[in-house]
Image (tube, rainbow, N blue to C red):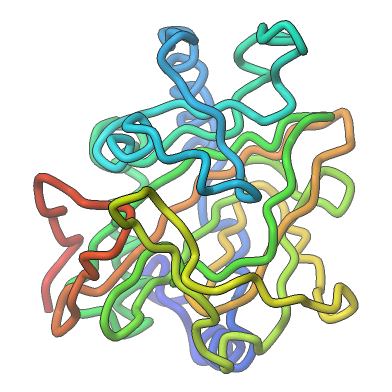
Length: 282
């Protein structure tokens, strides 16, 4: 690949035509182990009484301050199915968490090291970014048995710049298969543009349009080995199903946006008090 992380011409052509590309062995075994161990450490110190429930189906309900403030914090979100009828967790907290976000890349040294690595910058440079920032990061667990569905969506809906510039970097920390809830995407769907936007208004957060209906036959699975990075165009329609297996599907996800010649929309759910530092400026 030449410079570590740099996309070659075949990678770029596939990305431009399909809206995503898989880079195998992007992260080393040592990097994966370091991030997984660090997340274990973070979970050990997490107080269950200060968290929230995450759902992609009912975003309007997740409008509490905890969610908003997570943009600049390391915050913990439970699976919808983690709680029993009595309101208590049905299993240990480490098996009940949906995700941790959204500032691991800034506040945790282990995740920052990967997020701001030279290979990550080289990747973005090869995609044409001039002054990119990591606008959010998430550790996603996809827990066995209760790991929730992520409905079809586009990343640009949630991270709005004018013009649209979001790219998702989805790193598999475990093998991702059809059985344990891998990503699925509609190849080439990024060429149709942004369908709807996720807006933060005075009454909370909401979508400006109803969800389109998609034919599930149009989706293809993106099964990858641990260490593989899936680079996702911000307008690509993608989703994942519930994890109905006995194995988790951990992943670390970064979302990048351009700041050179682009405007961060004031309608975004993320309203930072401090501007993020660019990975580089060229």
